[in-house]
Length: 302
Image (cartoon, rainbow, N blue to C red; front, side, top):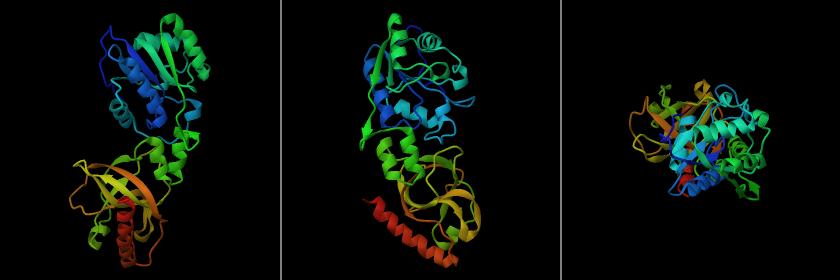
């Protein structure tokens, strides 16, 4: 991830602190705080990090809700002008005092820090918000602790969103994120069977490390290169009828014609229509896909 803004030496910042995977509604509250605190005199900024050289213990093995590029785009869309994004290994051994003085003040010239009540920092995640206030006060730093955002009686969290996606509850994930969950992937060559049956499909590899719904057939939204979100029927997983063993997202885009090979499309699985199953014949598969297409139109037109 690159910086969204080149900060001038004398410019001070209001910094949102967090990993911000997915930039969900809870993250947005922290980001909105930094943007509001920045006002006209400070630069709204974010301190986040990448995990190529290691990650905090509580985040290890967790499937990602956004790519680094998507996270930057979402932060910018939320009003952040400066992003600091070191690798976790660059600061994981720092004491809490070193982290605040060297990174937040020395590198970002922070005057305001905004974080959630569960924010941890310093070697071994030893310090919390009270320590942040203690260290920041003599440095003239204002600390704003943002209450957790709750939905349906529970805090919005990346863990909660991940569980919803992995269980196929995509509408719930969208409510917690504040937008449809989606991922981008290039269109690759397939078996061309759909074209022969009258419904050409696009095949996309599932991005490595991304949170995915369980294998099934979904009503889905897919964004074509013209920027339009279109209705579709998407098979996520293997294609047993045609002996496909590599998990893919294979999508029949409704009411669309065009060559999309090599294009990067954004796909948003939305509503599970059925389990994946093997059909006795290709003709039986064709009838089922057309039936699923009618189902998808009804679901996505609500």
